[in-house]
Image 1 (cartoon, helix red, strand yellow):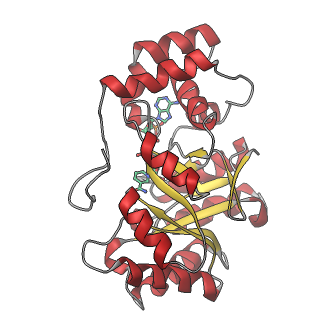
Image 2 (cartoon, rainbow, N blue to C red):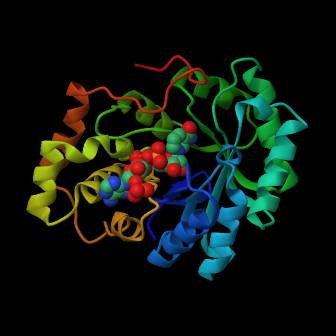
Length: 275
Ligand SMILES: NC(=O)c1ccc[n+]([C@@H]2O[C@H](COP(=O)([O-])OP(=O)(O)OC[C@H]3O[C@@H](n4cnc5c(N)ncnc54)[C@H](OP(=O)(O)O)[C@@H]3O)[C@@H](O)[C@H]2O)c1
């Protein structure tokens, strides 16, 4: 599996998103994804399904050390001892000893960044997380986080798809040597009807989702984590390593964000976004 290498973390360029998967269906989807070749699972304490994610991992028969497993800690749990309790519970629910990556799910609206970074670093120092990182951090918040961390921050996971440009944020992550993990990479299906994407897909004999996911991973430092509960779509979404988009095709897809601005993950937990 191709990886983005960031501060010693080798992050598979495509991961499997697990938000909104529940119960046996979640376990089945995770097992299906691992059988199809995914080696990176994106989860979170807040998804309430890590027990089922763990079931799916075990059912797949894929060895633990071949899988890159991410969890996240909710904004309400960023102070200690809540932070450590959250990570310990995720690890126990997943049925493993250590996650590969723990992220702050959303920046805190109440705690100083330094407090949150102390909790995050402690999880790594205790050995329950191999690597640490962030999610939904703006450039200003990234700067604060880097000033307060002992260990390197390996990724910033944020919404990114053809209808939401993130040029400045991605450039900033690259400068810090971080990966940029694209969540909701399909814009929760919104981008799949786009005529420009549909035209490229039909010319290439690929699906619109495959074109969008290929566009992600052809960008330096970008990792993508699509979610699907459907076995056919789970398999199709990772079948993106047998073609390459031309520079013109990459530019045409990137340009869509100049006309559309569609953010799917927003609301009370969100910081003041960069744009
Ligand atoms: N850090 C954060 O704050 C944050 C926020 C949101 C999401 N995430 C992570 O990112 C992952 C992905 O984001 P997301 O779930 O919001 O959105 P997404 O991956 O952009 O879209 C998922 C939707 O697309 C559909 N879909 C998947 N593959 C398809 C295909 N090939 N053709 C047509 N439809 C397809 C899925 O339906 P089916 O299931 O029916 O296929 C589902 O409705 C999440 O699961 C989670 O792990 C993180």
